[in-house]
Image (cartoon, rainbow, N blue to C red; front, side, top):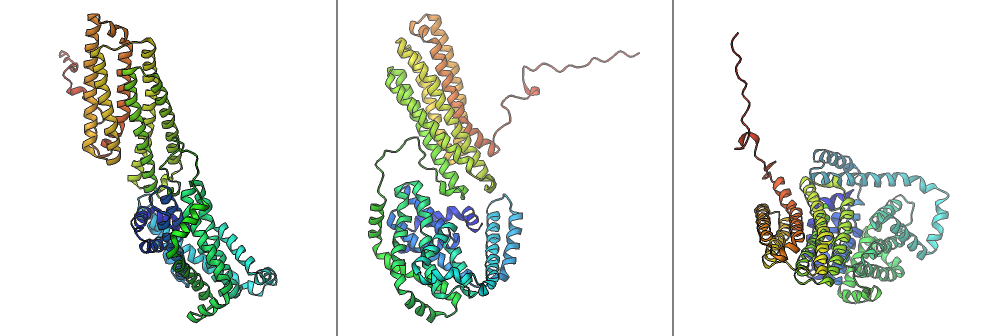
Length: 546
């Protein structure tokens, strides 16, 4: 709840902080501390960094510096939560419930309420663990379980690593160990070994999760795991020395566990910060690029790790939708070349592009369906509808090109028809108007500019008049008996009709924006009483007096 609330309320800001703080290792390190302190999960930070590196927005070295800071950041959270804040828990939960109720489905306040509720529950859970651990002190079974771990430190590290991997949270396991040591259930030296295991296991989950995103995205979690493995290997022989040093800071057993956790990650950062380029080279060798070519139909910008951050997720979907729009624009340009040159090989290229558009649309639709609309504020809900509508209409426009315009182009090429010079000029004029509309639709979709939206609607009227003019001139040429016009009459009229269909699909983005801004009339038809040709109202003649 804490992680979800923070990412939904401040996810966009956190990503901006990370992206702007990677100019050098020091700022990247402190950005990792700050972001993880808010997210309370180095795994969540690792997934954000992996997505940045996978898309080429950050180098592996900068990502590793952020991860070293993230590992320190999660220990600082453990430092705070290790104190007894049970008395604060009811206040946090009450405040969280009030905020959640007041701002339910109204934006950031709801998510802040979720954060407070989650924090309150965490503090309650920690107090319950401590209370429940008391009977274990006198348990006859527990020594039998702990004996193998006490005798074999490596086994203790592995068990803690597996527990951390299963729970996907080193913070949770470290706080559990703090509770057990504080209750006298777990000896301090065994707790130290298991803290090392928790740090090791904390690097496994993000690596496995990022493997689905490709080798490049996996290099930061992979490099982070390599640094943790080396750090644990160095720290294991020094456990007794570490325990003596940590005891000099604070001899309380519970504080010793959390202090060792912090000290280990700080020393790890100091050790590896100067050698991040070497770690990067090792990660690149361990996770090389795959030689297989990229599937053009696979989405490039849909970030599955941003599903908890509606603003980022919608931006990703919008970016992928613009990629669709670029392809539809190219399809439209190539279609005019086919009409001019009868190049049938170009027809198959356009059809392949339409198949790619269909695949991308399917990916966008699936991605959008997975987003939880309950977390949207009103503005995000409007954007959600706008993206779905525009992507759907782009797919329809691609189908008009593929299943109608191209068929007519093939028919023209097969019959060796030619348009009259006047007819070709009219078709090209309509084509240019629609192409301009496709380009303007993309700008309106991105900017939300009402002035440009009005320009689009004005352009629809210009196209309607151009269509009427074309029809009139076409009929005149038929009357004159121009051979090319007679041969291509049905093709000419059908092409104009399809261009207007495509333009209508594009204009929906403008009408949606104008309706959202309250600048759209319900109907363009004049009311009955204001029409000049309206029939006069029937007036009942007065009846003669009796």
